[in-house]
Length: 387
Image: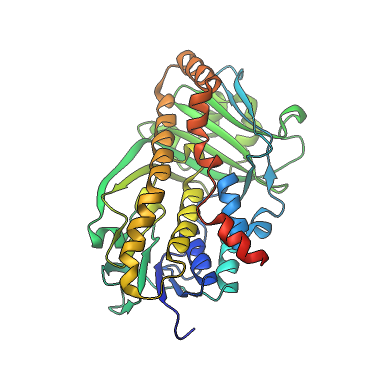
């Protein structure tokens, strides 16, 4: 690999590892720097829609990521009386699975390593320059033909390059946790569903992950001090959702709380340094596309750089990549944010809005547009794998 172009990546999360795997598969010499001492997934369960599954297939990571994962047939919303607002069937051509974040991360790690990328843990990136440089907390600097900031919402790479335009945090946040799955947790008629329950400004999302664990997200405004307490007030949440009290009672001590960030940047690159994933376009999780957009953009970036032979060609390739990918990403970000606004409607109004909106084909197409999107490079990578 001595004549290969080199890439250095800040961040060993989903976006960083997907990008590393994709670039390495096209012949780049890739090194990932992760600040933690080991690759570790933050969060609990994760949704992977059709577009994300296509990325994983292109990278050879789909089988490992989806092994044992739950694949639902319906996404259902219920009101404060446990009455169904909308029960939308998931079409066969629009797969949706839920899996453990740690399992997805491990599948991407293995794909990156199998492709020849290196992963350096315990190495914190604190800055970057447009010259393809990453700066570390140790005082050292690494330089490559391309530097990538996939270092999350509080990206040091984004800050160093001065790319941030907007960073807003939502009023709503979520308690996230995994509980052991037990037989008969969910009635047989509902066992193949993802169920989102509403009561006032509180929401409970029940997501089967596999036959061992179920993912719960309990959301509320950050001003709802009792509800957002990480020592979960099980009585309070059970009173809001009595039909699911048996699940709420099983919540343990490991519960995280966080609000959502919306990040918009004036550009996604400067010189030979680029940002992607939450570093460039963080969004609320309402459409389940945060990870999908990060992986999708990593595959598209590698596709845009495929065939590049000199570092002088890189800035133009990065600009073209952004022009082609930004619209679908910002569309997803906008609709994910809009979806969250129904939290603050009265219960009866919310039910009417959701029911009428999802019955409208145009609205449904906007909400599921990202899930239906064929990631840039999917056909190219799939063809290279089978050839």
